[in-house]
Length: 535
Ligand SMILES: Cc1cc2nc3c(=O)[nH]c(=O)nc-3n(C[C@H](O)[C@H](O)[C@H](O)COP(=O)(O)OP(=O)(O)OC[C@H]3O[C@@H](n4cnc5c(N)ncnc54)[C@H](O)[C@@H]3O)c2cc1C
Ligand SMILES: NC(=O)c1ccc[n+]([C@@H]2O[C@H](COP(=O)([O-])OP(=O)(O)OC[C@H]3O[C@@H](n4cnc5c(N)ncnc54)[C@H](OP(=O)(O)O)[C@@H]3O)[C@@H](O)[C@H]2O)c1
Image (cartoon, rainbow, N blue to C red):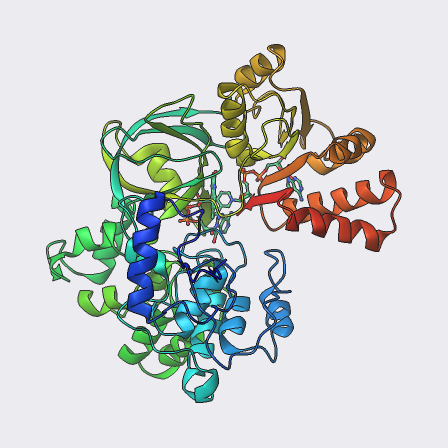
């Protein structure tokens, strides 16, 4: 929290920021000067340390829409009547995932005070968030002056953008060497998940368990060349100071097609084609195929249209980094970082679409080559400070990633607290990630309970939350002993169902009404005893 103590010590950089005390103190002084804060007036509370609420912007600080499973229409409804910056926050995907370089609250504040001009950074929110932000942005000039955030001074409102040390934020990545890939599924699996390792040696980067790793991947060269062919352009056409091919490989997103590409096509055509492109640009779906339109599919759909490469590139969105939960502890793997990456591949008509970063890691990047990377500090996801506290970790699929790191850390630090892991996936024979390691930890007494849920071993789907309910009494006992609960993996379905199961366990075994149980779980969240890393 931003605070000014009675001694007028100015604290803009939160204590949790990755700086030494001396660096923090210097930065606090520097920013106080740049922002014109003299310490005589208390700063209004802010959600995450860096952004000041504008004068006249009355808001209770609550964010009832802050739930990643809630559809955007519902979130916007809950934000009705709130200041513009809070409605902007409601438009975001509510994952606080850090992919945009902020959390949701700080990103919206930065857009509202115009220190951030990019409205398309919310990866999980995708096009619907970008569209809503664009509409809200147009309201900025209509906001009464008193409630309008002050124009940014020399220092942007988000401190982190100014002061990021190398490799600490997406805006200042460093290079790390790609060391290895190993398939975690056995032959016969329907999934393709990789254990990936990077060498951080040269980069000087470090991390703690719970952090995520940001990676700037390149697009698939085959796809890039097909797009260049559809444009009827040359690889070497210069665009933004580099050859078109390099620009398409490194700089722009080729999926999904942005509204600006449809706009460009509507400018270049006429009649029914123009009308179709115009409707697509407005979020309509004239042919029922809008959801499948990546950039190449758009060029195929409007095959007579050949935009100039420069205009084409300008109509595309920047290629964003991707985040992965770190699956190693630096104490067990000095100078290295491990990830657990599910390869995204799916069909668009007759064509197979490859997830940019996951398949880059799975097959395109040669061992020993370097990639631009950064560590995304976890804001509220980490081991309890007290090593005696028991922990329950619920991580189906790639959700196991941070828990492998937690376990390695608790072993390396000889933490006496008990560890309980719920892992689940499709089939026990093929999809038991890190089976040998987990069994060895179990045998050595480091992993006190391991509960498994296989969804496709039998007729009936068994998910982690079913196992939680089966174990309800013990689960409640652990909670009563102060256990911290962690969930990682799918945000939209699994995380919601796990939370429902937790509420039910509290109601049944804690002998509470449904309302009391929900309040109990909400309190666990507030106390930092129920933490999520979901995507
Ligand atoms: C904090 C955080 C932690 C994460 N940790 C992990 C992790 O540990 N492991 C992991 O594997 N991932 C993790 N992710 C997800 C990861 O960041 C990427 O989103 C993921 O790897 C896909 O990126 P990509 O570039 O390969 O695919 P993209 O090119 O981004 O393609 C993915 C997109 O394709 C679309 N899509 C995907 N499947 C289908 C389908 N079947 N049909 C139609 N459309 C589809 C969706 O729009 C999806 O968003 C994490 C995300 C966050 C925010
Ligand atoms: N943003 C992205 O582009 C991206 C990239 C990778 C993964 N993801 C998402 O991240 C999630 C993790 O993917 P993953 O490969 O690690 O595994 P996953 O697809 O989540 O599957 C892991 C296990 O969870 C089960 N499961 C399905 N629905 C569930 C529910 N409601 N509650 C509890 N368990 C449930 C699955 O069962 P069944 O499949 O048998 O039902 C499977 O056994 C997925 O939702 C995936 O879509 C997103």
